[in-house]
Image (cartoon, rainbow, N blue to C red):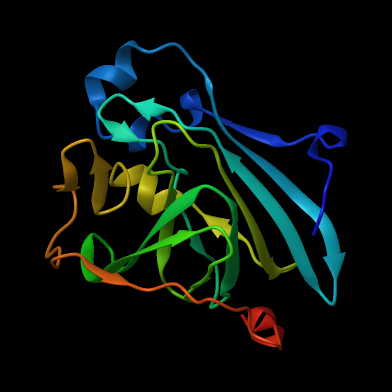
Length: 196
């Protein structure tokens, strides 16, 4: 879907909105506020679904690759995301308080799709120092996000850094990270996204 983003006003996520979830605390403490990513919400609405675009420029958060703040959907809502430009790593974690029951990552490139599972918190990472990431997603118009666990535990259970994946010690029982493959095609029927 072609959208002229210059005609739209995005919600902007600033460093000041997410200093607590950054791995490199020294960098986060000393860096001035800056734009980190841009959320173009409801660029299209149809069939009870919102279509959103997120643009994440290539920036480093000190030693960590830039990422979204991280949230979990309230209820059992799923989300479908595709990559329009660049590459993405989605980290998905299922938790019971600070205890991690499951965690995995999916790396996808342009034209590939990822389903964000119900009851899994997720963080979207731009793993490039040079290329902007642009994603397009579908979610229920009733889907809401909860950021509180990520704020309380200072991010997801893994950080993706210039030194690779690093565990977040604020979590308990963190399994070894496994990797799943993205899908090459979008499901024909998206009604499953409406089920919360």
